[in-house]
Length: 194
Image 1 (cartoon, one colour):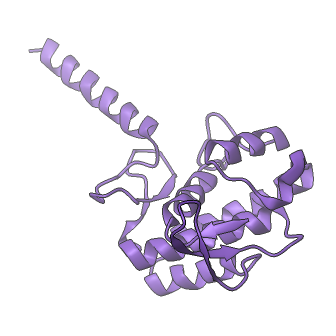
Image 2: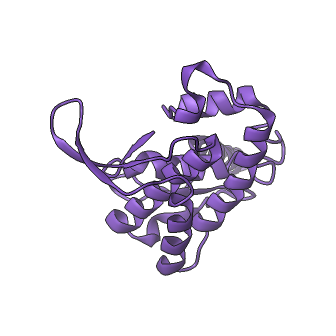
């Protein structure tokens, strides 16, 4: 796998989204990554193609267990209190399978920095490198203040706000929609009692 350094938003999004697959966050629906098939859908949904799963090799139950451990680590990095802690945690993740950066041409012929992953790395190790590079890029480009917890009542989700405006407050659109619907209903009830 070659992780483009300039495209840190992918790794940062995977970090938050992976953390939010936990049954701790999804108390009503349970673990969002219970099976190898669910992991395959998660990776495809983020456009992530791991070398460890090349040639159509599906993830195994062991791969899923390793990714479950990784999601705890990813959450821990996103929840860090300081920028230095976030950087230290992201460096640990990026070193799982990340090798020295290389300068290579992208499909358009432009020079780009990439972090290749080690041959033979497991899916969780490659994913850790992607997340680590993404979180380092987010700290460098946007700052640690963009590492956030969801503000929706009762939600334990986390995310890295890579939006241009930096005003995101919900881990998913679903949390924002639920709160907006609840507020709308409350206003409607209040209006009908007058």
